Length: 224
Image 1 (cartoon, helix red, strand yellow):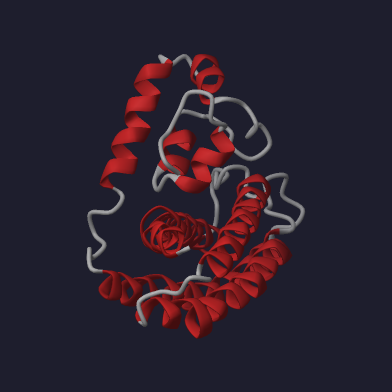
Image 2 (cartoon, one colour):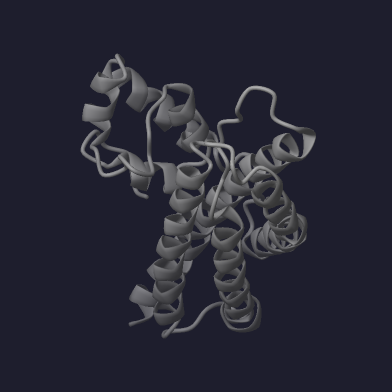
């Protein structure tokens, strides 16, 4: 996103600003069911000064790129190694663990019913998305871009929005990744893993939307 404003909804901010989801959870601000609320309204409801909450989010956004390389080719490799491969590896164990927790604790009022299905849908869509980047978009970028590169980038942005919807579903069915008292080790490990996975995915999308894609969209417009 180009900048964070008080009129932006908390749902959009949670999906686009790395660390915003955890910040919202800490302030007891829902960004799944009540996600269409403007940031200014959410801040007041949480007993916070809107300007103070905005400043916290801007600080998160400004620090989001610090661990990513600056050069384009290095950034692509970073995204592939740090995010594509990591997402695949983590979903491979998160999904069966979610199935186990739902099966064993299905009668608990805080059970994350529907979580494994949400993760499976996200896995399938994310795999398709990453394959398009790996086989089409990133090779195009490695060659220096193309006058038509704006089209696949636009498609990737649309798919990021769909992935953000899955993140909101995960947030909803896990009650904000909130563990009940006395949660077993499997349930605890599941939510710990989910917190990292969802934070990683938001950072992944941020680096593509705000850094990598923006470079080539500007180039594409200049060529045209």
